[in-house]
Length: 320
Image 1 (cartoon, rainbow, N blue to C red):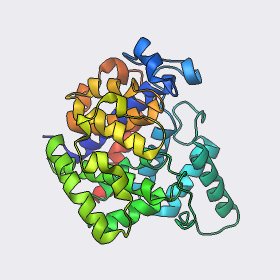
Image 2 (cartoon, one colour):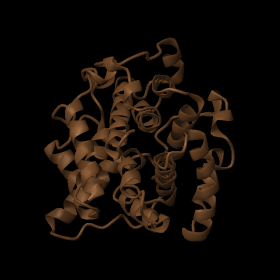
Image 3 (cartoon, rainbow, N blue to C red):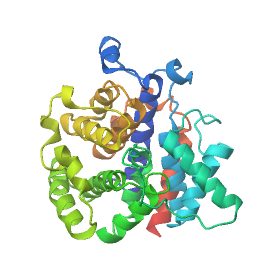
């Protein structure tokens, strides 16, 4: 029987492998990928990186997990993000080669707080532009699903909102993070993906109506009020907009029955390939286990042993 640490390792490896599959073809169109489909781990291309190199998505996820090993401290999470950008902490091969515009601005804000010796606070939601709804907080939120699994939903939402708002404060981005983590929590309860999805669709609207004061969950209607798997591929976008990213992630997860097919479908959707495939890979890692991840992919994964060791430390830290 799998331990809690095993499942975290499955999730972290699944996420990083998905990320690395997507890095070489990030921003390629779906039409181009239909002619040149990704079938395995590639190298070079977009960022001229060796095969198995993951991006800022995994780096920031690992920074989040690193901080949570010591408990929840929002300022410390922010500090890890600064260390990643400025000191190359938790980079795959010693340099930062990809960072989102909104995330970059947010870390510059964190750095100013650090320089002035001020307490780091989340970005206030008031005045945040609706266009500031990239997937930069969704891509790093996975560790919180494990950290918050035994905490009340209200507390979990508050913490997710704070952590998201270090870079993405709009309620739509926060809601996307909440949906993703709640799905994982149902998987951790031992439910299969279909039951977990049914529970998610019942839980999220009711919780948001009662607790958040926001109707942003309604933007996720194709996930919450329909079966996302029923939509044709032509209607699934895979851009960096948080709504598109989450829809694409769930679409791939719910339409496939193994890790390989899940992530290959995700990466071949095109556009924001690293993030969509990482998020789908994290879920598929939990659902199917790392034994289903092809060895030829994990064998070339950057810092594979470091990732497994972090997962163990993270498991021990949040179990104490």
